[in-house]
Image (tube, rainbow, N blue to C red; front, top):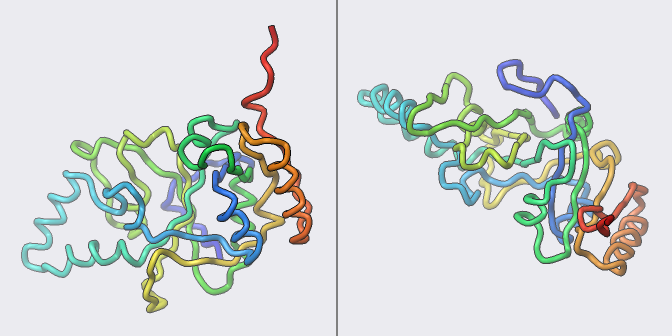
Length: 233
């Protein structure tokens, strides 16, 4: 279930458009099981995920001199936090297609912040929080740690092209052993507003996706991306 946390930054407009770029296998998994995969935070490529900037780390290190478990908690906590990443953008992103899909076989789910929040109400087992990522200088700027989710809502400025919004769950209360991540229930008809097919894909691939979606009982609007449309001259 989605929990609104007033301490976490979010866009004010629920119609803010968000995207998820993924390959066909992950898309099929989403439709087949109607569950959204959330990755363990320390499994991301960025080794700084869930860690602190240098000024914050120095403060925590001083606090942990007489209490070593204080620092150990943050190290272990990364293994218990799971994340689903989405991209904020009014339009498609050429960079996101390049980074998150392979060759010409990928898809993009278009949704909105409001749809994202509503779709999470389908999950009755775990608590989810949604927050917008802040991009800072990890050598100079401070990350607050009065909220356990804050370390997962800050990234280095090198990643600010991602314009990321995150669904985050802390699985600590559920005493689970998490390997790569967990799957949570979502209402797909609420979550998915439109599906875009990779701009470099061929017509057979688009038809395959359309038939696949139909056979699984869904009726989403499906379009091929127009990023590769013919130039006008």
